Length: 243
Image (cartoon, rainbow, N blue to C red):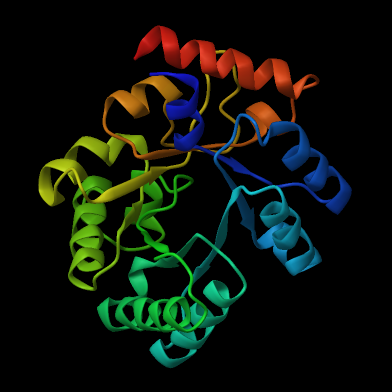
């Protein structure tokens, strides 16, 4: 796997408080990162300012706000996401098939009107912070995490979405059940040398990519590093040695 192939698979979570820090991350790491993910923390503080900065750098923009509302509201919100230039966005699969269909309709209507490239729409299955114990005891769901993820992934495909957000532990099962063309974006990625933090279902970049991840999300291992360029270059080397 060469540098360009690695870059296209890497998504960096801009989970920082300060807009200037976010801009610095984009500026420094755009040669290494194909897509920058803007989540609730940053988007609620700075909205389109960071979005427009990412677009100026010709990088992909993934709006990670996980829509979960009635279909009509999600349709209109999805329309506005694409209108404002997102390449990726996501919704919660637990919102149901009709809600996911509405998200696709809104997004495709905007793509057509504003001559945008077809967006990638993903459904969030089970958050990587959710363990089997939490699923059973707090959410009263007696399925295994993997069984529940597969059920939600099948719903997302039925709704016409492109893929799902799911942990590396479910990667092989998703690809087996839904096919190699069904996109899986995998959070909870930690290099061998990184701390686990608050994620429960994690994997290394190499193991996730070897198991079929189409995109992997990097976060604090890079953004909290004292030398971010050194950190991302170590990740590149780890991937090259393991793929």
